[in-house]
Image 1 (tube, one colour):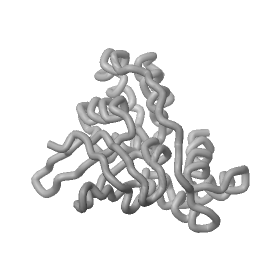
Image 2 (cartoon, rainbow, N blue to C red):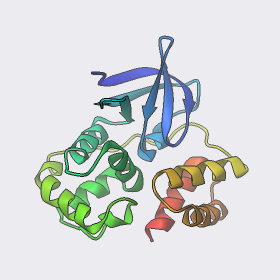
Image 3 (cartoon, one colour):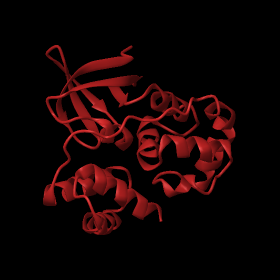
Image 4 (cartoon, rainbow, N blue to C red):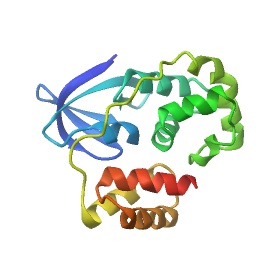
Length: 199
């Protein structure tokens, strides 16, 4: 199984990155938290990898830190939480906040993430409460690299939010507001949009 990849970023988007490792391109699905840390295309990147194998596909999920990879693997160990939902959770809530919400039993915080209902939130707390306390709370790398600009950035932001499970109208409204409020980079717009959608 692939556990780690180091290479050049051939292409990147909020949902995935194509990593060129010595001439071989690996398509790696990533959460937004990892997207924020990546440099620009053509730059080097190192990702912690969780390889998920199904009968019809082998999918690589990449993370900026070993802690996020561990959280992802803890999440998918919970009944009815698959890799797609686990990636959405890590995109919609910071790792530190997720650990705090689960370890403190804050069930109300988790359903703000699309796809997480009250029953799933209760199951996450029940099954992971003791486990997440053991995950070290180290700082994530600062976001680097250029973001998008103008309408391209807002279009990409809307697409990223819809991919996470938000309704298109809600995503467009949040992105429109976020784009007016400050920095127009793609990373900044997505961060502000998620805060708006979380209320």
